[in-house]
Structure formats: C-alpha cells, structure tokens
Image: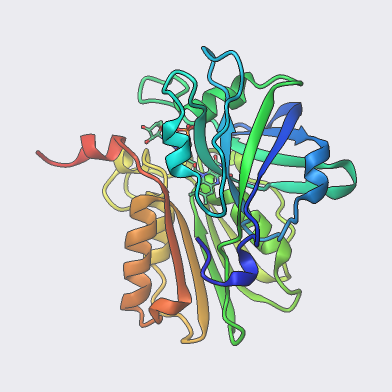
Length: 286
Ligand SMILES: Cc1cc2nc3c(=O)[nH]c(=O)nc-3n(C[C@H](O)[C@H](O)[C@H](O)COP(=O)(O)OP(=O)(O)OC[C@H]3O[C@@H](n4cnc5c(N)ncnc54)[C@H](O)[C@@H]3O)c2cc1C
C-alpha cells in the first residue's frame, strides 16, 4: 500500500466491467480489455496504478463479490463460502481510456514446470471472452519518488512490466535513469514510451547462456534472477536516486539488499515481491 495519501484512493471501491477484447500482446502477455459504465468514475493515476481483481472460476455460476467497507474487504472475502468465492489476484492498469470507459490488463501466461498454464488469473485470462464479467478493487499507485530525485532505477520481471511501462510513460520528460526489464523471450521486447534520458535495458531470459548469470541455466528458469544479476552489476547509485524493484520475491528482497549495500537510503527504495516462485524451492540444495 502506498504511504503517500495522494496515491491512495480516497474511497477505495469496487468497479464492475465486462471483457470486450482479448489478444496476445506478445508471446508471454495476454492483453484483456474490459469496459463498463462504472469506469467513468475510475480516477487513473498513471504510474503503476494497481488493483485487486476478482474473477469467476469455471465451476461458479456467477461472480460473487465481497462487501467493501473503507479499506476493509479481506474478511468479507473470506466469509464468502468457498465454492462461491471468486479468485482474487493483483494486477496493474496497463492502459486506461476514459472516453471509452475501457481498461487494458496485461496478464503473464505463466506455466508449470510441465508446461501447463497455471494460476486462476492466468487460466481465466487465456479463456476470457467478450461479455465475461470482472470486478476490481482500486488500490492506487505505489511508485512514489521523492521531490529531490536526481535519477530513477526501475527493475522488474515480466509481472512488473505493465507497471514499469506505466511509470516510464508517467515520468517528467527531463527524468534520467535506467529500467532493467526482464522478459521470457525476445518477442516480449517492445517499444516503451519513455523520457529520452531513461535507458531501457531488456534482459531476455531464454537468450541467456548458463554462464551469464548467478548459478547456471536452471536458475535462469526462475523469473527475476537475470534482472537481479544485472542489478547487482551496478557498482554505485547517486545518493538522490530513487529505486523501484518488483517481481519475484527474491528479486525484490535481494535487489533491495544490493541497493542498501551501495548506500542508497531505505526511504529511497520501493520493493515488492509480486509473487513467489515455487520452482526455486526445488532448486535449493537439500
Ligand atoms: C501490485 C501488483 C501488481 C501486479 N501486476 C501484475 C500485472 O499487471 N500482470 C501480471 O501478470 N502480474 C501482475 N502481478 C503479479 C500477479 O499478481 C501474480 O503473478 C499472481 O500470482 C498471478 O495470479 P494467478 O492466479 O495467475 O496465479 P496464483 O494462483 O497466484 O499462483 C499459481 C502458481 O503460479 C505461480 N506463479 C504466479 N505468478 C507467476 C509468474 N508470473 N511466473 C511464474 N509462475 C507464477 C505461483 O508461484 C504458484 O505456484 C502483480 C502483483 C502485484 C503485487
């Protein structure tokens, strides 16, 4: 949750919408477009504006939603009987078009080690059809650079790409800095609108050889490791930098640790483990 009240919705509320389009944006990301009259009241803040997304599961006959009261929703969500409880996952506004009352959501289509699509949200997105209903609970933005920031450093795996793209598109034109963006394949690399002074450095996971990173090819199979390796190559940051590190939990926590070692104050680092890889547990020595 953002600490800055400016970035937190004054009255967090649920918005309902329907799918109007779904397409593969790149090999790893499916873009689902939703629209609805309620979106007329959505106040898009840009940057990494995110929300809690509620989805109907295949066995459910309708989308049951929790009662939201101020910031409270979790207990009401758990009170919904399990067979009716919607799937809930966190996502970012990839694009918002107020005139059309439309929003794009970019879903990473993540797969199990056996290659099967996994995760309620990823499976839902893959099957999304026009007319399918969704609801989302507005959470505001997390990116919150101090006023005296001299340069920005954004580091993300593919789950952080919608947020990183939103941040770059929202930065003041004179901003300088670096985005380290890891993606699974070359096809996921795309043009990102950004200030001229911000370098966009793509790290393509399936092009890395076993010697390129931390501990070999198996480790590169885990999203975030390659971005972390690139981040740990940095040997200095300005005292007045602002760093934002999101993605798999090790990228977030180890990335923050490296930045602290470089001397960056903790107030100038935002880090968030967006998700946790279970594959990495299998790679740990017994
Ligand atoms: C603030 C915020 C914003 C986010 N924005 C986005 C966004 O815009 N787009 C997006 O795709 N994700 C985004 N995420 C990450 C997303 O919430 C997680 O990836 C989430 O786990 C996906 O839910 P699911 O139902 O598909 O899978 P879950 O049911 O949560 O997980 C099922 C299994 O899949 C594994 N898994 C989950 N995500 C991944 C992944 N990316 N790669 C490999 N394995 C995975 C889990 O370890 C678990 O084993 C965001 C997270 C946060 C906190």
